[in-house]
Amino acid sequence: MTDPELRYQTLVEKLQIRGSRFTSHRLALLRLLAVSEGHPNAMQLFESLRPQFPTISLATVYKTISLLKEEGEVLEIDLHNDSHYDGNKPYPHPHLICDVCGIIMDGDEIHFKQIIHQEIKEKFNFQVHREQMVFYGVCEACQKGK
Amino acid sequence: MTDPELRYQTLVEKLQIRGSRFTSHRLALLRLLAVSEGHPNAMQLFESLRPQFPTISLATVYKTISLLKEEGEVLEIDLHNDSHYDGNKPYPHPHLICDVCGIIMDGDEIHFKQIIHQEIKEKFNFQVHREQMVFYGVCEACQKGK
DNA sequence: TTTTGTGCAAATTCTTTGCAGACAC
DNA sequence: GTGTCTGCAAAGAATTTGCACAAAA
Image (tube, rainbow over the protein chains, first blue to last red):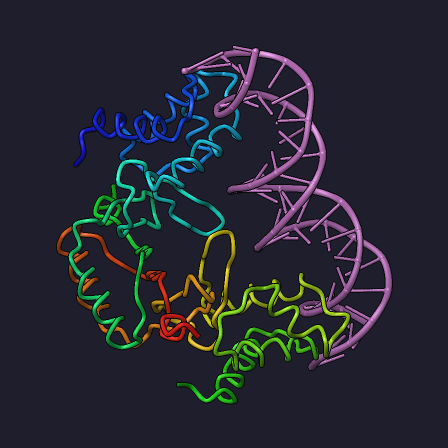
């Protein structure tokens, strides 16, 4: 687990190098993305920031996310007609999505990645650069009927 | 590999049982989905059918796909703002997408599925019902510079 | 003061929906 | 005949874009 403050600094530095400027809205969004353990979509980020920044717009959220994606500092998770973002762990990793409560969990402790890439290389002679794995099912809490 | 004609019959039967009716447009779409080795999206299906059925509409394509999804006879692949469909192998299976030529290939001969589900069960106590795995990279043909 | 970021609204893209007429059965 | 399917056009939802103004450096 990355230290959130450290992660925030990284995001700031990446944009600094790029020559980007820092508005209060943008800094707040960076912090939110750096800290967030969840996997918000653009609307959720927008709604999270709105109480503190009532004039912020959804377009600004998209535009800043777009910068961070270019820098490889935000991972986009393509779900059905809905993109979610992970600014905390920007490298591809599996996600577990509960059909009952909708939670999106990280499955980054799963260690089959090398094996799979190897198998794909051998069977299909296909060179994997990145992957997106989403597992749908029922999370522990929902199984226990909470 | 399923026999395309057999697969077509299965799709027809599924809709028959359901009490659906068969227009020429719908039958042609079923055949296209059953036969297709590729992974077309709605627009591509629409364009494939249009030469033979100039009056067909995109809405009809979506509506019939929707029926087949309900019957579990079409697999939807959620890509970035773009859904592709597999009516040939409707069960979840990995896909390999070439960043160069854009081809979507089946990776259904990859045998790590049981292992992964087991690992997810053990590590997260998460019960997997279905999954979507997409691997992006460079296909054999494009590696060879064709 | 120059360049980039912002909010707004309009435009895009993909998909769904409502409806009157067409067609399957 | 009657109930479903169709094409069309409009509506929705997520995302992008153009632009004049605001703010950063």
